[in-house]
Length: 356
Image (cartoon, rainbow, N blue to C red):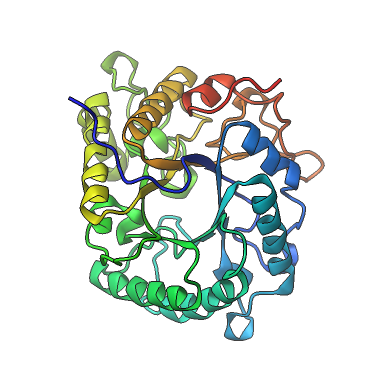
């Protein structure tokens, strides 16, 4: 039987360029953390899209009316120029706090409205390669309330800018269940987004920001002979993760998610987009990680679903963990392109391995 495909997005595959415009005040941001060469390198990998997480809430903290500083607009203007020159789509992603214990404020519209008014007004006539993502992973907010908010924000942005694609994601961390309840925007330039990190026990093993520090060396797929022992004096959360993993950690369980994304896309007659997927590398077996990326990438490609993996220089990225330089003389170092790439991961992500 022929595999059904989603409605095509304007781009196909890319990567998240993280740790630049996130979790810092404007005065602490290095304007040159990423350069045009980085964007050129991403293009060499075969990407036609970059997702750029921007923590506007932190950037604009304490500034009247959430006015975006000109320093930040100068960076975004530069990125927009690179996007046009390189013919590389760039997503301006309104990022936000996503650590355990965080939650989206019920008053978030008071932040989204002035910020998106500024962004849409500035870039409404800019390159077609810019895309707006209204908000990353809303969570801890009631689904109906979020749907009302994003509906109004979408209409606001579209009233200012009739030209650019707009990405809309559901509550509950951009879950598919919440995405299905989003308004039908009846817009020919809307893209619905979801994130995919299943099984979470595998993809986030060792991650301190979600209380997984002691859940490490988890195999994928589940293999009883390779499973580590429960941590000493395990928490209830750790017990639950280990107990559920034999069912959650199978290839069949991963595969069962993907046809529903296509069905939704065809129902709405709009593209769907996997804005994040990835596996935290430091505590995962390399072969298992390659296997997981290969499976997920193939499932997305077979269904024509656009994707941007998480992330680039970080712990989820395509660079070798054996050569992962984290700090020298108190300053974080970038890895070298293409020297420090893990070509097994590059291949598993469906990217270009011929970089000579």
